[in-house]
Image (tube, rainbow, N blue to C red):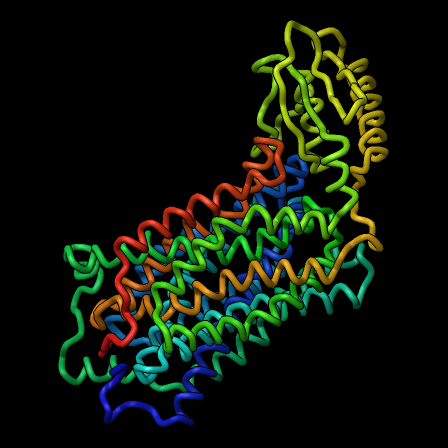
Amino acid sequence: MSAPDATRPARGEMRKVIVGAALGTMFEWYDFFLYGSLAGLIAEHFFSAVNPTTGFILALATFAVGFIVRPLGALVFGRMGDLHGRKITFLTTLVLMGLSTFLVGLLPGYAAIGIAAPLMLVTLRIAQGLAIGGEFGGAIVYVAEHAPAGRRGFHTSFIPAMAIGGLLLSLLVIMATRASMTPAEFAARGWRLPFLLSAILLGISLWIRLRLQESPVFRAMQERRALSRAPLSETFLDRGNRRLVLIALFGCVMGQAVLFYTSTFYAYHFLERIARVDAATVTLLSGIALAVCAPVLVFFGWVSDRWRRKPLMLASFGLAVVLFFPLFGALLSAANPGLAAARESAPVTVRAREGDCSLQLDFMGRRRFDERSCDIVKSLLARAGVSHATETLPGSGPAQLAIGGQLLVAPEPAALDREALAAAVAEFRAHAEAALTAAGYRPTAEGAAINRPAIVAILIALLVLACMGTGAYTPMLVELFPARIRYSGLSFAQNFGNGWFGGILPAVAFAIVAATGSVFAGLWYPVAITAVCFLVGAALLPETRGRPID
């Protein structure tokens, strides 16, 4: 049983528990997801000192910072939840998240206060990450410890479903804000409004959660004086409990994390940055797919109660490994058929001397990328987001840019003074951009050519893979850990996996794309992580359906 018979809530009370925990989670994740959805604009305001490619990756890295600190939040708030109760803990995380998000909307940009702007932004992202570290696991534990044993999967699935709802709400607010002003106004100041509106959501969330009661399992442990006195020590120094944390992390959490973030944020930015679909269209199509898939996640939670947890989750991992590359290839073709055709009919190749090409990343904003001929070519392609291959140029000579059958020779910096080099680079870029456009590498996707129904269908397919695993994953985590250390053990595994494997995914994937020149190379990261998780889970993860958790 999930709770002693005397304290198990009635059906009406159970609905209040689910609504209170799930809505609070939705509002917290609304706050957290805003940053990811507006990463492009945040890069312009807070990382304007570097080139656009590096600025975008830095914005995604700052997004990832909120995930990297999540394990620390899990330790702090997990211990608090096991010592002092589930309810007081996620009230604390809610306030911390809400205030941090509101302050992002007020933060001056780089143009106003210089380097202090990105430093303050990182600080607020750290506060958000700490809060989320104690929120998601706590909400799952709270609902599961109220739920009947045979409906644990169904009831806990509302928590991640409402996290998807938070992402959907953030997209809807962004769409409404965009529609109320011109694109220039939104880019200048309108992007701040969704962050400022979080103050209203904070008030609603607090009112809901203050009306909830403590978990019956926690109350029963209090009455029996069975609470852990040192939950962190008991979690990590006890060999059996430590093994459970490692199995949870490497057998299910990290696979679910990369599945979720590939299907949401990476797909979103792939459409915007690589397929070059305008942001408003990407937001609308992503919102439709999310709206469809939130109830699908609840369905898979119900399936995990009727069937089993482990096979459902492993199936999602295995399908993701097989389908990621084909689905993203289809996504590019549906979003920008001209670009997909150009990649086939006029592939782009950079030919340069060995060791002449630099990685097109500049984290300090001090590199010019015009000291070698290959860097001139690669910086142009990185800025344009054009997929390309690199070949070694036999002999000596400046780098060459091949676009289909057309060959352009880059300037040789060593042979020119600064003024002549600037003129030569400008001329080369003008010719290269004209050649790319003529070959089909246009700066934006043509609106009439975008296959919107196909994009929505592909996004839904990606999200269904994530929902399949998540529906089984949430009750399994609760059932895996003993009640005394459940909040600490579950939260650490969940947040370490999501923070260090899932949250860094967009930044790592786009850095791989920048390094290799291949628009699909970034997918190797989630494919590799998911494959490892499938193997570890198949070997070590137990089936947990039907376990008592009190």
